[in-house]
Image (cartoon, rainbow, N blue to C red; front, side, top):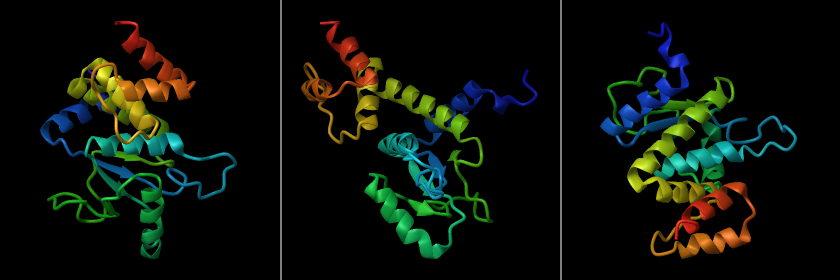
Length: 189
């Protein structure tokens, strides 16, 4: 038995998975500055991996809540910025739906992405959960294709005979991930 079970990565993924099975619209809290936007002008920082992960969570119909120390006057900018990155913000600093929890200062969320509170671990936990859900919903091969499409901001993915849209995109891409997905699908035929 673990004395601190939530220090274990798999325990965290399993907890979120169980919550998803019970309540499919998980709530993902996400910090804005230096998590989704380069607030401190760190050279080369685009935060694209986090933004891609949030888009993948949104594709599963998760609520996206910005949890920020920003003043309310900045909320329109935050919303516009996230929308420009393909992410709909369900709320800022408040629960996205009526809940009996999270109404007294700390909002309720199933998972939190923040540069100041273990972003690397939080990223990998949510990433593993999303993979697991997509594999369950779509099957392993289609799950990989859905994940690849989300990573590459492909809005419409035709899942059908031969995956023609994926073949076209693959031919334009030299990403290792796209190559693995392509090889898994087409080497079986």
